[in-house]
Amino acid sequence: MGVRQSSRKPANAREQIDRAAYELFSQYGVRAVGVDTLAARAGVAKRTLYKYYPSKNELVLAFLRRREELWTRSWLQGGIERAAVTPAQKLLAIFDVFDEWFRRPDFEACSFIKVLLEHAESGHPLRKASQRHIDTIRLFIRGLAVEAQVPDREEFAKQWQILMMGSIVAAYAGDLDAARRTKAVGALLLARNGIDARPGTRK
Amino acid sequence: MGVRQSSRKPANAREQIDRAAYELFSQYGVRAVGVDTLAARAGVAKRTLYKYYPSKNELVLAFLRRREELWTRSWLQGGIERAAVTPAQKLLAIFDVFDEWFRRPDFEACSFIKVLLEHAESGHPLRKASQRHIDTIRLFIRGLAVEAQVPDREEFAKQWQILMMGSIVAAYAGDLDAARRTKAVGALLLARNGIDARPGTRK
DNA sequence: CTACTAGTAGACAGATCTGTCTACCGGGCA
DNA sequence: TGCCCGGTAGACAGATCTGTCTACTAGTAG
Image 1 (tube, rainbow over the protein chains, first blue to last red):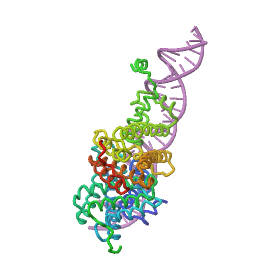
Image 2: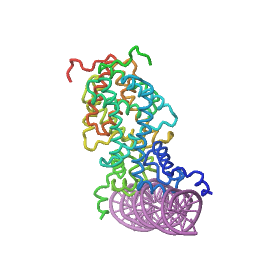
Image 3: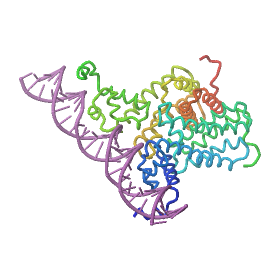
Image 4: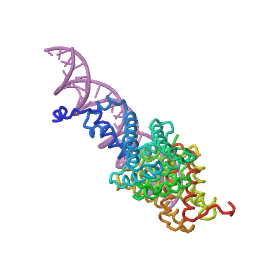
């Protein structure tokens, strides 16, 4: 029975694996999902999975890379670019994008934070990878800060990321308005840095 | 050999269990620590453990309660009371206490956040318990906001907690100065609410 | 046709997880 | 003396976890 489907859907087993990993890991966390569950969800034999990824760890690393591509770049950065024009407006638009995200019934929080908190051992490859992905996001913020001509870019970017991560955790803890609330604090921080993000310019 | 020690250290098996649970769960997270490891660390038979707690879940709930007592009340609230006098100063002192915490080599982040993020299922008892413990902290903040005569206490408390949680995650991701950075943002938020926390009054 | 490639199904090993159970020990107490 | 009580050590059941392996199949290229 299962045999027949192989000809109907031979479409890259690898892509199926990556998709399933993305769905399951981002929703439930990497510790909570086993490779059997994963293979089943991907509609793929466990053997095939281990052909592409020599260990679950490698698969998780690939998941984190995919998360950066789909979540960080496509969804977050893309959403911001679409929503705002000036760099200061883009910074604030992060929280508009978050606002919609927090209200989705399947809101899953940030995978990088989740993986980071799941691994206490400081040298663990998954922990280090999560840190790097978090750094990547901060570098993006820093870029916007530079464009916005914030005096101390580094300090500002770190503060802004603290706001972002705090709002995500708060939303996961049940505060659906966390994005709106955090945006207000962000506006204060921008103002303190001499940036007025709400000029007469439309949108 | 192990027999002899029982008479030397009969001191409440239960207390030993609670201590071990606190150490291991707070450091490594609840999913990462099994009951065997826990019983071994407590120097107690697994049977004894299951006598006091009918399941691991119950043990984790007890751990969270203990965490609230030791971390939230004793350490955090106690530290704040000791460090500051006025409510506004107390709010800012949170980040002084955090600053020292973040620099400890065994900095373990917030157990409530960890447990929350480890359990995706919205109705899960551990998730709900974590949310309640996070609520407790916010109520404490809210109390300080009331004392400080902040106009909108609820909104302020939620924003302040976002700052707190964001700084903890940032510190766990490697930013040792997260507390100092966040304190600066907190000062902005206080100022916006008409509170000047840095009067001539000493300390 | 042959050989190769990509994949399947699923058994298996060995570790680890939660939770239960038996058999035992030693001190306090009536 | 006899009995209970708190605790120990560790075997066990059954699930689940990562990772390996065999035997098979279907499609494709030469």
